[in-house]
Length: 517
Ligand code: XMP
Image (tube, rainbow, N blue to C red; front, side, top):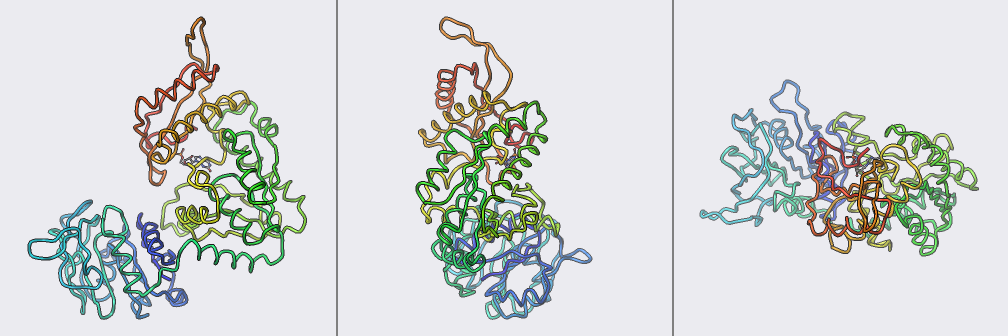
């Protein structure tokens, strides 16, 4: 396995994803994890990430010395290369010309890392690589034993290698997709240079997880809150395979779900896969708790609290349950770790059943804790979940509660469900669903005048929202074709008499958010 030491780059997770895509297991740890911890990890290779610091600072962050003493291959990326150079006796300076974005790198000298990898050939016979650069500092003197393997105008030493000790540095970022050969370079490092086999495949991941879960829970009962979202669904499918009827899922229907969602969850898990699912119809309780509440944060708080209350009531009825399973995935873990160490910015507090395990004295089972979303999806498919479920757009925990602006009322939820369903159905029919990252309808409790054949309508407004985004931190509104929007708007206004008008949201994030509340 590969150890990735994080110096705080926004791209560190991408390094891990590319390594996993090469079929090799890896973990991200903070750069100051300590000498002992590095040795105990026993990595087959180490990657030092980029980061915002500068080696020229008075006390720059440094890699543990063990990194260079273990005798395993090391790849330093951006800051990682600079600290490697500085720690091994080279020199780094604050460059006058900063390089950000696209650059063309000329490969030079022969090294195992870049051998035979190129986008174009240069007239002099060297390979040229189209890469993504982002740096202010640069290496100006190689450490002893190293040679230059890549250069650009602004950074004559854009890559360095000591093939004998298997130490490599790259100034550019191989982990981002703009570096077209990046995935190949990282695969070359972890597979050929570190000698890791490509054993990290969906089938193996499932087998490992099953073994680990069986070992952890023995013959005890496990309870899982099933939401219908990707993470909890894959957790359910995995646990069903691992421990069969020791698993009980609790599905809380809060009345704020999408059209047909409850039926789909019950059909997939209870009928199809034979999983025991307790279906709690709590619509009335949720609507009562939300009556008269208009503040978005207060709505979120009430929905979250009531969910925990209902879930706890149901779980307490089950016999022999010692474990609570959760669909926590690797980015959640890194995010909360980042929040603790302050190395990465907290993006979104994910909502899990907070506080419950301690209160109910349950142990935690988190079989997806080491997996990225795309890995979760692949094992979901491998476990037999339907494609549509596994590749579904994200849906917020508070559900339609934050898509009905202001007070939540049942008639509003019913209207919104129908409108949202039409939008999604049309997106799928037009093959646009997978081309947008998230799409949904929003209910606006204002009224607008309309005219229908022989009468006047004075009814509500539905807003359509579709965005394109990679990480949901920033987003662009999707440029859906006018003819498509026209078709969706007509259907909504014709099929739902309570809607007099349909509008399309053209706000980006920032300054707007993806959800309306
Ligand atoms: P915003 O609206 O903050 O949304 O731009 C970013 C992503 O997060 C989802 N979202 C939530 N998910 N509980 C959740 O589990 C929430 O309260 C919540 N609010 C927003 C949103 O759907 C989008 O994918």
